Image 1 (spheres, rainbow over the protein chains, first blue to last red):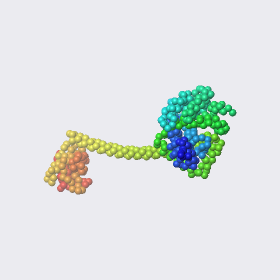
Image 2 (spheres, each protein chain N blue to C red):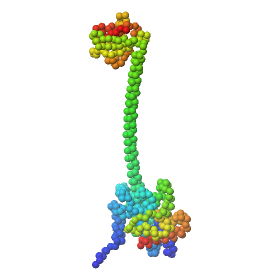
Image 3 (cartoon, chains in turn brown, green):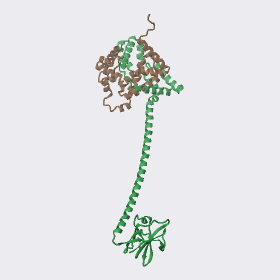
Image 4 (tube, rainbow over the protein chains, first blue to last red):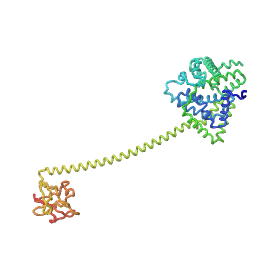
Length: 188
Length: 295
C-alpha cells in the first residue's frame, strides 16, 4: 500500500516555500540564510543581466535582501509565489539603479547604450536543473527576444518599447504576447 | 466582457511586468477573479516570465554570501531596537498597502522600505567610509613619519654642512698660515738665525727669521726640552747687550708644530730663549737660558 501522504517533488517544493514564508513572516533570521541559498542565483542572474556590472549586481543583491526582509510583511502569498515577488522586488531595484542619475554618469564611459546593450544576446549560462537559457532563446525569434528583454530587463513599458524600436504599439503588444506565450509553454 | 479581447490588450503582460498603476492592478486582479480564463492566462504569463528569469540564474561569487547575510543581519538588528515606534510603523504601512494594493511589489510597499534602505544600503557605504577613514589615518601617520624623518635628515645635513664648512674654514686658515710661513722662509729679506743649545740643553735647536727692514720676527723650533708645569718659553732679542722681550712661544710652537710670528724687534744682534713663568717676565732669568744665537 502506498503511503497516503506520498509527496511529489512539486508538493515538497511548495511545502518548503510555505514553510520558508512562515519563518520569514515570523522574523526568523535563520530563514534568511535558507532564502539566500535558495534564491540568490536566480536573483543575481537577473540583476546582473540588468545592471551588467558584477560589482553593482552584488550591491543590488545585498540591497534586495534587506529590502525583501523589511517589506516582507507586505507579501501576500495568496496573490503570487514568493519567487515572483522577490524577483520583482530585485528587478525593480536593479532597474531603479540603472535609471538613477548616478549610475548613468558612472556608466557613461561604456560605449554601448543601455537599450542597445539589452538587444545583445546574453551569455548562455549552464543551468542543468532548469530549462536552459539557450533552449528558451532558441524558441524565441530575435524580434520576440528583443522585446521581452527590453520589457523584463530594461523596465520599459510596451509604449516605450514601441518608441525605442520605432514600431507600432500594436506590433509590440502582439510580439510581447507571443514571446511570453512561448516562455509559458516551455515552463509547463 | 470579451475576455479574448481583454487578454489580447496586453494588460496582463503589463501586470506581470509590474508597470501598472495601483488602480490598474487592482482592476486586473478583480477581473482575473471573475474570469477563470483570464486568471489562467495571467498565471501562465507570470510563470513564463518567472521561468525566463530562472533561466538566467547565475550563482553569485561565493564570498558574496557572507557579505550579504552580514549586511542583512546588521540592517535587521538596526531595525529591531525601536520596535515600538518604527517597527510598528514599518509593519502597519505595508499591511495597509497590501490591502489596497493588489501585488506587494507595487510602489507603496517600496515606499515603506525606502525609509529603511539607507540603514541597510549604507552598511556597505559605511564600511567603505570606515575603510576610507582608516586609510586616511594610516596615510596621515605615514606622512607624519616620513615628514619627521625628513626633518631629521635635514637637521643632520645641516650639522654635516656646518661641520664641513667649519673644517674647510679651519683648513683654509691653516693653509693661509702655511702659505705665510712659506713666504717667510722663501723671502730673502728674512735672515735665518740659528739658536743653539746651551750646555744645559745641548740638543736644543731653534731658528729665528728676522726681517731687519719690516722688523718682523718669526721663530721655528726644531727641538726644545719639555717644559715643567706652569712654564713657557720666552724669546728675547739682545740689542747692544740689553735683552728685549720678543714674546711668548705658544705650546704648538714650542713643540715644533709650526712657526710663530713674534713681536716686532727694531734692532738686535742676537736672540735667546729662556724658560719663564706663563705670561713672561720683564727681564730674562739667565739660569734658564736654553738656546742662543747671534745674527
